[in-house]
Image (cartoon, rainbow, N blue to C red; front, side, top):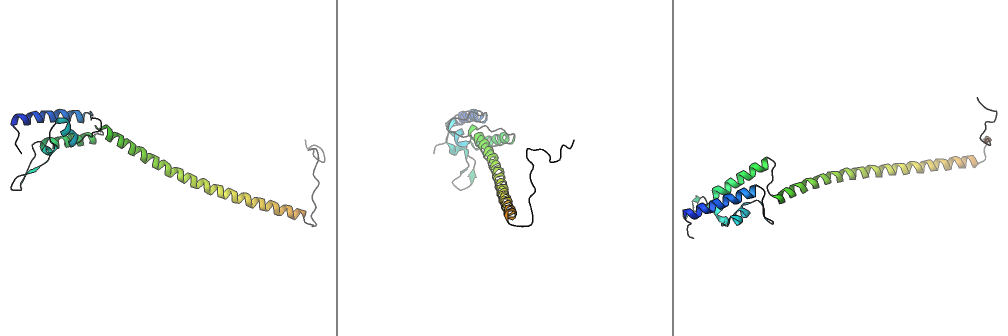
Length: 165
């Protein structure tokens, strides 16, 4: 592969820096991410130039634009530490992850509330059934012959012996 001239390298580095500034400012093209691939595509350079190479003897050497890739990653990390996400897709993903987390918490709370209400309903039904059985038992006891007599009830809602006032 042919080597590039110094002037071509300077032009490519200037183009990469312009694209880097646009990407980090949040101007990410539709369907792209704020990453090295988008940086290379937008600047019109090969992505392989951002990664280390090997000499013929196997020793490593930096890629022609590796220092720019490291600068890009460093600046991107600084932005993320400050809470700025230049990639709108990544920001949306983070927002949706937080929303899903909140919804999961609400779901757990709702399930606990449903469990509590189901237990309360079961307890209430058991108590109503027990009260009904007690009422039926008392009615049967009242209807059965015994030496207990029912007291006469008053009619018309007045007291049997006059007013208390």
